Length: 265
Length: 160
Image (cartoon, rainbow over all chains, first blue to last red; front, top):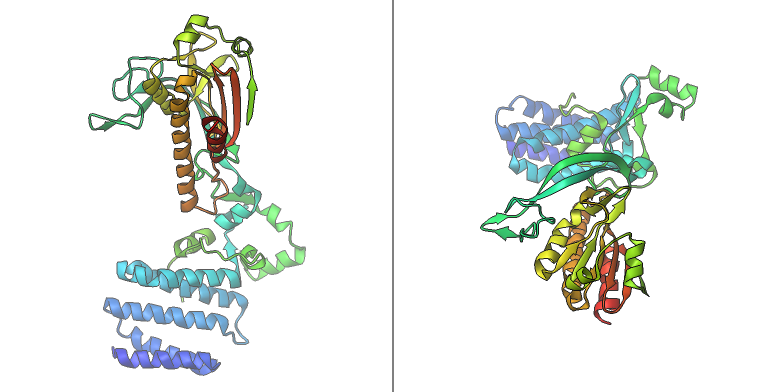
């Protein structure tokens, strides 16, 4: 593979895009891809192919011909992210190089296209932390309440508060060992949904809602159009509320939308 | 924060606690667990602090209403202290241990906030604290965040 030739051609394609010469840019990118596609044996060649495909698909996502639909544009953008993710996953070197780029693509994608909400036959699955946080669900966490009959000192084996012969403070070190509390005779009192759980990570991260509840928000015509054209349900919360989804990285991007990570274009 | 003069006997009666005057005088700190239903309980997350008071102050007694007390682990982000009857002589040690414990909770909260600043479930712990200063006959109630509790203890008790 002639690397300098590929670099020159890529630069040319970028200039063509910049100058709004989309048709020529398209042809140039196709040429580059078919050139690299013939030689993809080494790690470097694979990376060159995948990143070029990502760049091309990202460009093609915003350049629509009269035959292209918004859905095709979305699929191209998703595949651009997939190629970047594939390269990012390759090893630590690309992990470092592409993390920021990939996450920026994800943020731009969400702001432009919104996110697909995965659907099953009867339910829709909300896995996005932003959506969960911005609806009532994010305000609650789980808290389990226990009763303990006995608390034993791990250092001396005596009842920690009730036996005055125990002189050990949990958390302190005695003979090289940290003293801890061993709880015995544990009884679960209740599990609560609360706004102040002890562990803030014991929260709702996934919500499966009956499809009907979501579909009720649309007109019959809209639903019919969606079904006939096999269109996904899309969340536009970030777009509409001008939220920059900085916390959504590439892996989460695929997870919340239930998307396969492997490119299919 | 509420500080009022109260007679200890009346306070103990209100709390349904039976303890002899001799025991009151002999102990530097008396710990009275919270009554919940038919039983007396101590918050599990305060056990380390209470043990520290037991070890550092020496003359400490836990007095309960029924034959025994248990431990509860409810209301994760809220800490309700048992009622403490404190001898003025050990007040600085006890309040020192309490404020150190409170600082640790604030540190933990700050760390959680740093790790996940957007999580609405990260809260500074709420504190409910009651204690009685034996020699001054003063009953103190503090309710607020850990930071507010430290401020009240420092400004209104330690610096008074």
